[in-house]
Length: 144
Image 1 (cartoon, one colour):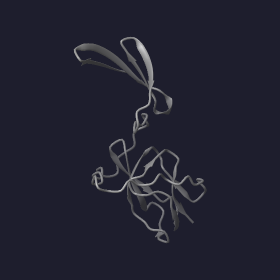
Image 2: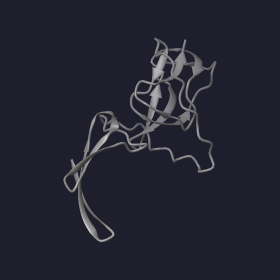
Image 3: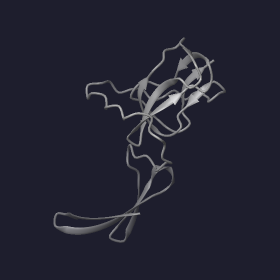
Image 4: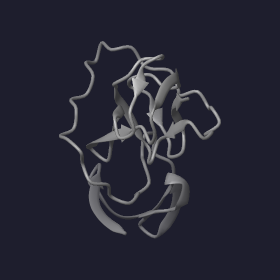
C-alpha cells in the first residue's frame, strides 16, 4: 500500500493506494474508498531478468498498432509471458527458426525481454504488430 498526501485548490488530501486483482486499484481518499481502473496500468507481476537494455519508444508519428489477434495457444504458438508492448518483431512469415532464437522483443515493466522460439520450425503466422499491447498468455507467433 502506498500513501500519498497532496493539495487541490488549497484543500489537503491523503490517499492510500492498494493494488487489487485484475489491475484495478483501491484508492482511499480521506477515508472514502474508490475502486479505480487506470488505462495502461499493469498489475504487479513477477520480475524477469532483462535480456538487453530497453528499446526506445517509437516516435510519436508512428501509427497505432492493431490489437493482437486472439489465436489459440496451440503447440506451436509462442505466447506472451507477461503483459507488455511489442517493440520489435525479429522474423517474417516463412522464416526458419531454431530453438532459442529471438523472434520478438517486448517491453514489460520498462525492460526489454527477448521472446524466443522453443523449438526448431518455420514461422507460420505473426499474430501481433510492432507497438501492440499484449496480455500474459496472448499468442504472438505460430511456428510449425
